[in-house]
Image (cartoon, rainbow, N blue to C red; front, side):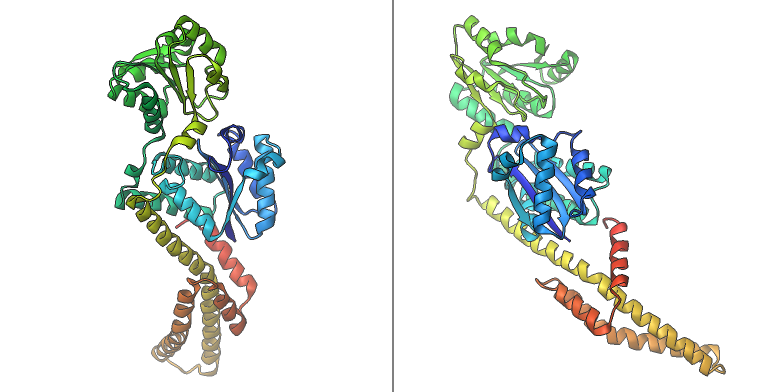
Length: 434
């Protein structure tokens, strides 16, 4: 079987569509279950981030796999297939492997080199494992992607080539507002991204207030960084004093509507207010852009203004690592496919040896134990030496493109039982990842 990825990202779709196709934690297991319940998919994994939604499947039917995966993604996100299809991209076999490795290294992120994606790949694998839809193929692929991502960050400065999405957004805000020192910044949310935002603006000398649905959570996070804590019910008052609002709650539904911002702006005499929405789905009503004195920067805006470091030495070095790792992974994968044929050949040889030794024992019953053991050892050595060169060579050849044809030649030349090879393959899969 082969790896197929069907997905959409900030590169292929507007934020509005990404928002609608967000695969929430409660939807992912259902989507995974339906994918493997069909006739075309053996394994499945869903990677959902603020920049992308991708479905990885193991299938041996490209066109049927694409059609079924696309249809189920549309069904589980309540997006019409005809609206989704123009924005989907598809990668297969080596390109699918290269894509996931690039994603894990941060090469495909809105902010090149961001490291949060590694945790998101790890979480996606965990969800697929818990749902029972990640077998040996996707387990090995995802685990290797994590290793490649770590290698890139160890051997290159890719994590310095870009910035976190939060710091990139704050840079855009600072370009509009000027220095954040002494400014009043309202951070909406108390999760990991919000905490990072609060920490970064605090480091730039801003006065920080953290507002969260659960006030006690906001106060705990705020206390750790010398900020103030508040509840979401305080937003109308907090907006009156704020110069910058950073929102990244991860909530479903808008946290800040245009009416609330407009009311605050009237009380502030329409003094400039910049709202930075880093959430998907979006926290902030897009109509905030129409409010006098208010500006809105969201993920779509960031995608348009961020400059990827496409030609930096670190990016080039990371791409070289990805190319190297893809070649190694595909070689391992091809060798793994030929392994059951080699095992079946050796088992057939062992059966022939055992049968002949049994026949010899019947014809020469006078042989003593020592002589019989010497004969058995000699016969086994002869068979091992005869099979050694072709089995080693076929494994080497299998790592090259088209290597599976050598396994097929072995099967035909020695008349190996296809069912025996398939049984060995199933046993390898049931053993799980190594």
